[in-house]
Length: 389
Image (cartoon, rainbow, N blue to C red):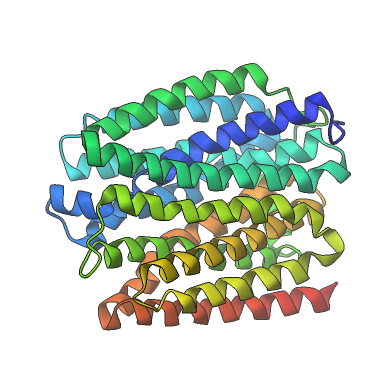
């Protein structure tokens, strides 16, 4: 098993960070472009949001398949294949002649993207010593935040200067180069033991994870947390593209630099330690709630400060909950991790339709109120986890 601080640890961590840049960059590159897509294809804001939401939905559902396949056939090869297909689908979006075609390509993209969250944490669990695992997970999730922020920033900048088609051509080409680099760097999982693949064994493994009182609350926390977090960014782009701010795609992309606060908190999560994981999750959610309240102002710099607070708190909780699942899964770690990601991405898909009525009813203040209701529920789940220890 790989020890922390060794060349093999750095190589494996760097490869997964690079993979996460590709996967989450491609997933989120469209986020600051939603107002532009709404205008260019002459569709409503809710319809335009489907270009992101359906990707999250298919990604989440695909994990029900990717996790068991990874437990049966390995971690490395599916990851590299998924990255290559991701790059090709994004290149194809440059030639989408209609909004319907774009949405279908984005839906297919979600299936390819699902390989990474289904295999990455399990790969680390199969390759690293236990003392190195939390740190590596933090680095990997830090890569998620950089990929998400970088994809949005790059997408907004390219769209402002070169148009929508150029976004997909440039991001897709860069993704192919990164896929080659990961294929050269990523070693095989050292302690991988294939598990028998059958429908009965798959359903049995998922059922055992869902009946595990240590895992189910973490799944719910991950899904509910992301349900709020990602869709706050969706609605903030529509809020800030209107009066009095009227921000363009490039400026909206800059908003996602606030994700870098999540890079910091994810990388620091390893210092919290397993014994204080629930306490760290609670602090993350409380910071998230404070950030939501700060965004109620009309001052742009305070809105940005609130988003920074949101990102720091969200990714602290997410990193700790993700590590918690891997540490408390007695078997089928890829399936356990993929279930976490199923809840996570289905939360993103459901969140749009949960918050949309709040948005239509009273705009941003109502969206914040709806978000706080979910975050209070998450705090209750953490209290339950602490009592069950």
